[in-house]
Each structure stands twice: as C-alpha cells, then as structure tokens.
View 1 (cartoon, rainbow, N blue to C red):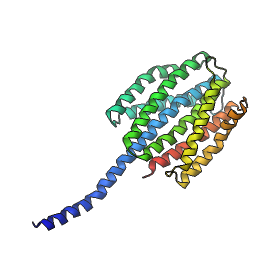
View 2 (view 1 turned 180 degrees about the vertical axis):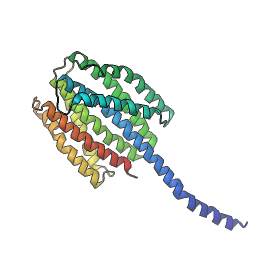
View 3 (view 1 turned 135 degrees about the horizontal axis):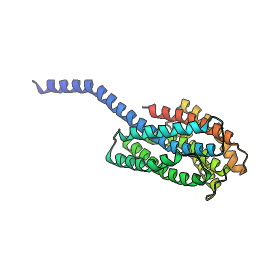
View 4 (view 1 turned 90 degrees about the horizontal axis):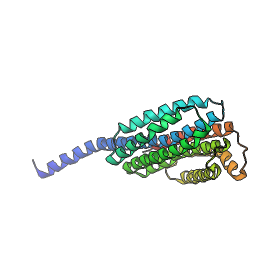
Length: 261
C-alpha cells in the first residue's frame, strides 16, 4: 500500500477513535470527581454526628436528631466501604484504611446514649477522623489532575464547615467543660466566609451555582451575627435549621461543580 494511502487510513482511524477516547477520559474524570464529592461528604458526616450528638444531649426534639444521628452513622459506614472498594492509587488506599481503623472506636462511642461527660472525648476522636477523611479527599482530588477537582473539594468542604459551625455552637451551648468552644466557632465561621468568597469569584462558578452560593450565604449570616454579638442568642433549633439549609444548598452546588466538564 502506498505510504500516503496508509497515512490517510491512519488519520481516518484516529478521527474515528478519538471521540470514543475523549468520552472515556471524560467519564473517568467525572468518576474521580464523584469520588471527591463522596469523600468530601465523609468530612461533613463526622461533624454532623457531633452536632446531632450534642442536640440529643440538649434534649432537642426538633427534626428528630436521634434518628438523624443513627442515619448519619449508617451513611458514613456505607460510603467508607464504597471508598475502600473503589481503588484510585496506593496512597488513597492506605489513607482509606487509616480512616477505617479510626472509625471503629468512634462508631462504638457515638452509638451509645449521648452523655455530657463523653462529649469532649467524642469531639477529639471525630477531629482525628475528620483530619484523615480530609486527607483522603485531598488525595483523590489531586489524583483527578484537574483544577475542577480542587473546586469540588473546596465546595464540598463548605458542607463540613456548616456542620462544624453548628456542632461547636451546640457544645458551647451545652456548657461542655475542658475547651473554649466559642473561639473555635469563630475560626470556622471565618474559614467558611473566606471559602464562600473564593467560590463566588471562581471561573468554575456558573450562574446556577452562584444562586446556590447566595442562598447558602443568607443562612450563613445567622452564624456570622452570632460571632459578632458573642451572645447565646441562637437557639439550637435556629442553628440546626440554618446549618441544614447550608448543607443542602452546598450539596447541590458541589454536585453541579462535579458534573461540569
């Protein structure tokens, strides 16, 4: 066959095959971004467990935090198993295994009836679980090799911060001894605000996502006001309701980021 003819055939085959290769690469990228989303939600669940634990301890009945706590434990368990069964690379696998080891004693304690004397111990154990879960998320985001993966990571982290703000405020309201929770609460509020502004200005933020961010921002103002006034004016129900609104809205925003090409 003439060399030019062979070249034409090769070019034709490349043109024919490239769309498929492109779609495969796109699907793989979305798959990794989906894992970033799932791993990021694990961070949030560590803080939601702490929030619900404190709400039950405070004897709050609004929206049944006891039931939510049970469901949150089950969800963390299920998603952790899914992450363990979806290998990304050796570093991620080792990090997920470390989370599994930390989770065993946390699960045992969080499933017991909430007691004020156990709250600080649980908080410290969940801190370690949060750090390791954050490591898993960051490693998967790095493996995605895209700027979008990092944006999904940051947006997903806002979900965690919404629950962390609520958890720290609940521990502060519960008068748990051993730590000063209000400065920690203030620090998380500042971190949320900084990331919120970053996302608003990101070139990955579509008009639809921006609407979600602004909606979350309205509920965030309650926490911002609590920091500035430094007073116990927020009832557990107000904290619970607005942290749920932020969580739901940022979950939708994170999903939209993850779905982008």
